[in-house]
Length: 434
Ligand SMILES: Cc1cc2nc3c(=O)[nH]c(=O)nc-3n(C[C@H](O)[C@H](O)[C@H](O)COP(=O)(O)OP(=O)(O)OC[C@H]3O[C@@H](n4cnc5c(N)ncnc54)[C@H](O)[C@@H]3O)c2cc1C
Image 1 (spheres, helix red, strand yellow):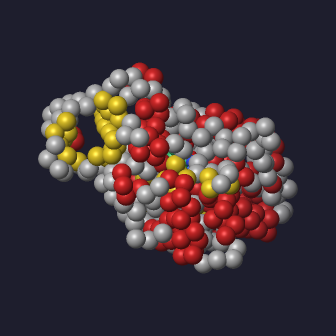
Image 2 (cartoon, rainbow, N blue to C red; image 1 turned 45 degrees about the horizontal axis):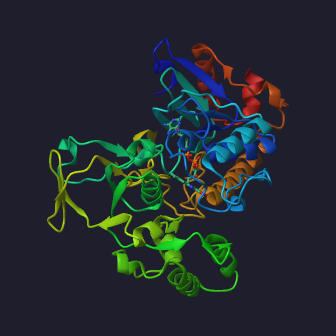
């Protein structure tokens, strides 16, 4: 799969620094941390903007789930005038300012079709629709939430009623008076239900599994911040007990409205299974008041109706699927050591998730949100900059000269031939050759 086997119309581009896949918060954080250490990089993004998950796939009333101090990217805090829980628009503007601050200019419309390591040359090859990028380091930042998950429910593919995934839901103004079923009760399902309810829709929420609903704040302090603070002293099991006691005092017994709690506490469950508790922003009060109806699991969809496990059959104006997202890495990364083919996540869990063999890294696959992104980005940048500085110190390349340099296919072939002969993977020799 080297450049000499490419279609003649394809371009082959040598990137001196790392190629980063994805211009979400993780890709931007990685590029910024590299830049701070003097390492140039190139971001490839399939959409036409940065932060595409936030801009294109979230509802308008979304706020950060966690306080802003836990969501900031390395080196740049949120503006002080932002509220504790920044809105979607505020977060997008923060990301744009972040990219401007570090002069990060991703290449848009570059969906990576495949990426693989070539043993003979010691380089990664990254293919988009027209261009083959060749690089020494590859950073995967394509996100834990790259593709919407649709549940495997009997009859769903033949359902003819109106259906949408929560990733395409924007706001509930057009659904006033409509009868709507929301399938899935994670943070997205709860927030979409609340937004619909606020806009006068009659909402039924399918709650099939046990789940933890926690108040977003406990006596004026963020539940998340409180947990982090308690972790300095106490074991996670004890913190879970404290948090659940507070949840009981503030929200009441979730069991009473048909929502059972798992046996394992919320933090333990997050640590062991990566399952995020719901941080309630008001939906639970609507459930208690009966404005949002909790319904049993779905048995099957018929052409126009939904049949529930208890045998009831109902017709809805709209069904919103809010069953989350998944990674898309397995569909394009031709590598089996670092990433798990099943779920598209690194095989080793956090904190050992960020580095594989042969110069491959991941940022943002920690199941720990933006906090995990920041930790990964710093580690990855530190590791690559160490190699970069020891291998390229003779190159004296200035940052502004580090825009992708296009090599003719022939030039690249002779470059690879040189490498094959000498078995040298040192960029110093690349410079000597050129
Ligand atoms: C509704 C919602 C609310 C959330 N709220 C919070 C919160 O409050 N706090 C928190 O810490 N976390 C939160 N998260 C977690 C979320 O994962 C992060 O907010 C963040 O967006 C993750 O950043 P990322 O860059 O890793 O992934 P993404 O934001 O998903 O960015 C990945 C980018 O990669 C691009 N891409 C994917 N595949 C390819 C490809 N093949 N080629 C090229 N480009 C590709 C995508 O287009 C995308 O732009 C939330 C998530 C969701 C869905």
